[in-house]
Length: 151
Image (tube, rainbow, N blue to C red; front, side, top):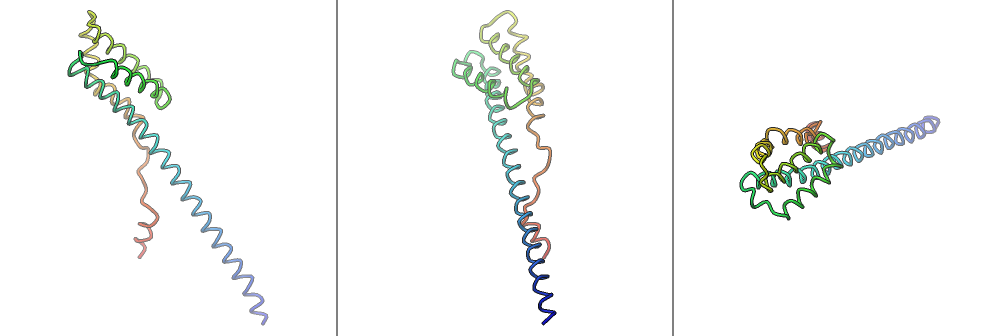
């Protein structure tokens, strides 16, 4: 009988400790999932801005005369959003790119120089975007796949 009186609190304490560890583990995994979702959402917004800029640059490079007001508005919208999603270096680059596009559209005497800078987007601009869009860590395997490996 004395052994039973000693075992019941010990078992209860062990169950409580195991439960606390399980709850802490679930909390950590939920935090980690939320963190990864935030990173993916940020990437999605940044990629959308990059796509708009890339499409505008491609259009100007192919045929500057067909870069219309709608595309200019799209570029300006992307540029305004980029202010909040990227650093000052990329924002300065986009401002220069915008000015070059306007020079090319207006057929000013400095058009050729501006067109050369626009055509260097993949050489100069894309690495600036990439700096902000690279994942600093790989996506870890899921907890379930780790458990399958233990069998």
